[in-house]
Amino acid sequence: MHTGLFHSIDFNAEGKQFGWLSAPFSVDRSPYFHVRTPICTIRNGDGPSILLMAGNHGDEYEGEINLKRLIRSVEPADITGKLTIIPFANMPAVMSARRCSPLDGGNLNRAFPGSMEGTPTSRIANFLERELFPGYDIVFDMHSGGTSMAHLPTGLIEENDDADRHAKAVKLLNALGMPYAFIARNGIDAPTSMAAAARAGAIGISGEFGGGGSVTPQTMSITALAINNLLMAAGLTKAPVLPSHSRMQETLLLSLNSHDQAIYANRTGWFEPAVDIGANVEAGDVAGWYHDFERLSETEEELRFQVSGVVISRRLHTRCENGDCLVQVGRLIKG
Ligand SMILES: [Zn+2]
Image (tube, rainbow, N blue to C red; front, side, top):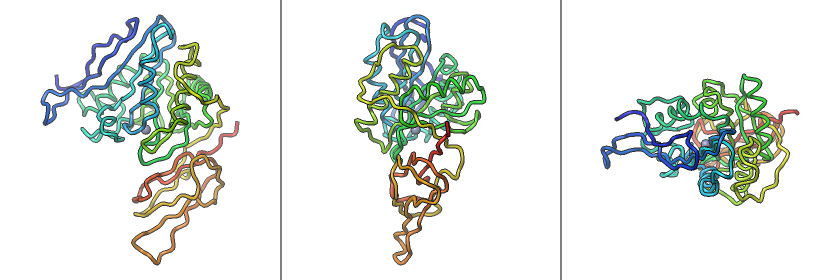
């Protein structure tokens, strides 16, 4: 009764169901408290099975809002197959507008494979990887950089050693219709949802759709486009299900797989960027300046890119500490 995670959903039943994934977790204000993750599952006969999730990080809203809208929009007759939607995967983090859960400090996207005896975040991770992901062809997990980062809207997959599954993932990545996508290499043992999807035998698709703990009409629209296109490319739907004014674009593939693609702070300071996300940069170009407010006579440090490519993210919070990532560059993959 004090471990695990339970629910009343029948994931193979026809029709549309709403429910909670409940993890018992005793807290001061409620000794028999359940940490509850809302979930919706829709089934119409046999066909592809897709799991859409957002709120893995609580302060990343494009996926959360689009999935909430999607849940109201889609009825069983609109699909062929199985569609499960988890808009707020780490609900305590979502409710507190934070990246990590305030209940246990858990970063869900570093908690896989988790444990049924663990903290609430660990138990959600465990349930997703061991119980849920194995039942789906595709797991699409939507991110957005978070409060402290601006992120170029990009699709994202992890390199997969299984050539067949990797080819399928690249095909779906291109089908999203986004201007950029990148392929990361964190390995099959990584504590992320994408590695968890790979371990569970599903094709993992992800993306960063904005950032700054906010949304814009453009980032909402491009996220809706990606969801529509993924569902249609997989054969689950025949027509767009979410409103979007974004146009389908040819996807430029980038890679992010080495530490020299990022610039990190090496001490406390204040970062002034020279370029914004989406900029094309060359190795040696000025990335920004690093100021020390406590040493007025000191010249600001000039930071330069080590690689050529497209700026995919940059830190929004000006004050930085040793170890903070300031900017990342995606390398163009020559097609
Ligand atoms: Zn995230």
